[in-house]
Image (cartoon, rainbow, N blue to C red; front, side, top):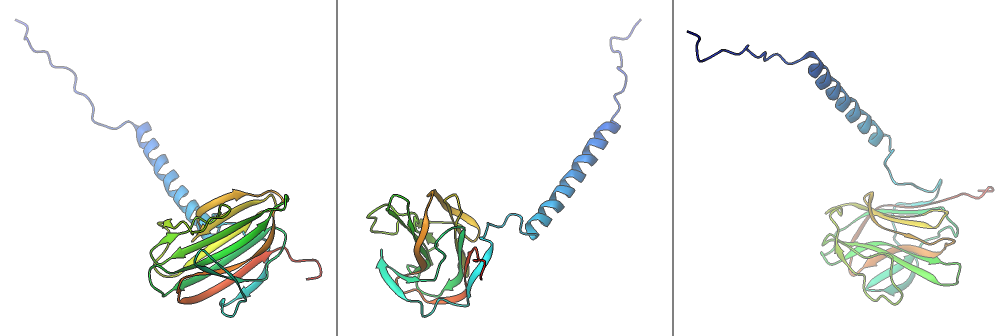
Length: 212
């Protein structure tokens, strides 16, 4: 009498060779990709752009000429190139209270005769200003920015020849704007309230003239 139960052929638990090859291939792709990414980062591939020539390098911003006060920030001037490309990079720490800060400022002259104010300030409360300012804007418009460090920071402005302005903190993007035909009418260092500065570097980049 035939049994009511018929055994089915046993299924093999061995992983097919093609699956092993796929796993190994993916593993090596991840390893190679990670090594390549690390090398690219180490080589500065992902660093923000700078204008080609270092025009000014200072160890601090002490003794700069005072220009004016704007939105509780005192503005001090640096010697800057008039035409882009242009980069301003400041590195420092502020040992003042939480509601104090520092950063950079620019005035862009536009082809229609108008000007555009830029004030990029960071505070020890880990806040950043809204840098590209509307006409008549009285306050800095502070808001939280997760990439501000408790110690040393770098603030950065870069104006390309096509008029694209990029503002960064510690290589992280804060804001961009497009100002075709803009030139640099002024700029420098901004100190907000009673900041206590410990400067690391002040650097201005542009394009050197042929006669140096």
